[in-house]
Every structure is written in structure tokens, then in C-alpha cells.
Length: 154
Image (cartoon, rainbow, N blue to C red; front, top):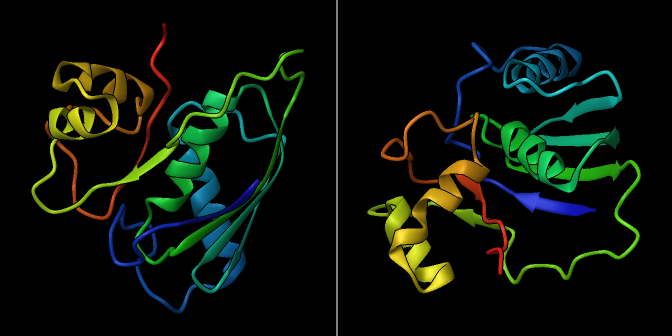
């Protein structure tokens, strides 16, 4: 749980105008999350200006991270306040990875990011797979986009 920052002027353009009410924005973000195949029935989305609050329950930590990224990578959203709880977490929690999220900078590409976070550029597909279905192509990332960085399997 916590606050995850995003670039406000980057991401999917869900809001056609700034005049939309907070509930309309929350509904659009919920639909956006759902289009990636995530079950949103136990997730509540609230929008306050440029901040999204996610609460409720979700099935896995992996899906929790993906839902946070999907909600935050929306133009006009600067932060996601994470209050999601993983249902039935593993009995022994895995150690937290050093870095769970990465904000794409100008000139970045997945193999460059993999080299930076894993020390091996060939591990770019690990990052790509962790960000599916939000990413459709490993070559289509943009500055300001936040990506999930999973731990490497030993």
C-alpha cells in the first residue's frame, strides 16, 4: 500500500475534457482496467483531481501491480493511492524486489531498462510479459509510462 507517482501529462487519453466529474473519471478508469481483462468487481476506484484511490481486494500481487499501472498510466493522473489488498496472500511473503515500478525516460527501450534493473539486456521480455496486456509490443513504450518490474526468478 502506498502512493505511486505518475507523469500527469502522459498516458492513455481517457478524459476527453477536464470538465468531467470525478465519478465519471472513476468510471472511465474502472472500464480502462477492465478492458485489460482484470476483474473489477471487488475494486473501488475514486478520483480526486489528479489522484486515483484504488481500494478493495484483488487475487494476486502481480495483478495488483498491473492494475495500479493501468490506473496510473492515464493522461491527467499524477498519482495512485494504493489501498488494494491481495486475497489469500502466500503464507510466506516473498522478499520485496528492490524496484517494483520504473518510469520510462526519453530514449529508454525495454532492453536498456532490463540492463539497468537486471544487469542483462536480454531479460527485456521479463518486463514485457509482466506488463501485458497493457503493452502490446515491446517496442511501444513512451516517456512517463510506468512499468511493473518483476523480480527475476532464480
